[in-house]
Image 1 (cartoon, rainbow, N blue to C red):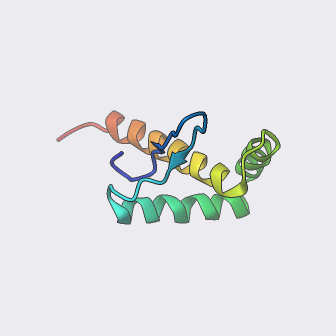
Image 2 (cartoon, rainbow, N blue to C red):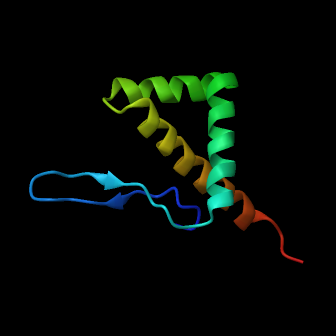
Length: 85
């Protein structure tokens, strides 16, 4: 993806995994990462989201990656809604 936050399928036989996307805009990815970590510390909704993802069997790291993708989609929607000049 554009921000490098999207997972890349890395399946082999019966094993289904996703690899990190090292491409994309690294500065944007870093900004999303900083926002995600800050929200994880401060925002109660984000804390519940991370706890739910972990209870579903994901690691903390995977939950933060999901949060970064959520943030990227949210920011994209906001930018699309902005009037162009």
